[in-house]
Image (cartoon, rainbow, N blue to C red; front, side, top):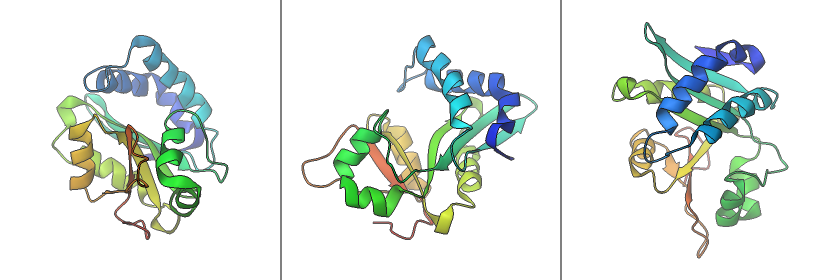
Length: 179
């Protein structure tokens, strides 16, 4: 199921519970304040251009979700964006990322892993990415997550020489500029 804009806010408490279960565990180890800020951030994110949420639900509730939006031409500098800009450079940021669908969060509860839930969420959220252009970033320390994206056909963008940071930038299997 996919929701556009602020319609997903009706499920905000369930999304927050899913987020907390996934991101309070290793390797993320997010604290209560960071988890609380996701709920606040979600409300603001629903106003971003092209915002959407993909959901997988079962009798147990939300098994997983992904959020995304279109990356603005004025590339942000907060959160992990500064690291992305540093390792790709302004030209590659413009060519590869701006105007593309940015997958911001992907959260799959432990009981739903290994069943294709992450693949389904990524496929659904990126299905209508402009010209097939979708991207995401994750921490280099999340080795299982990095391996999962690679297994699902997402490809790492090689950092410029001497610019490797703590994040890995991936392009979707349908991105026309994949490395």
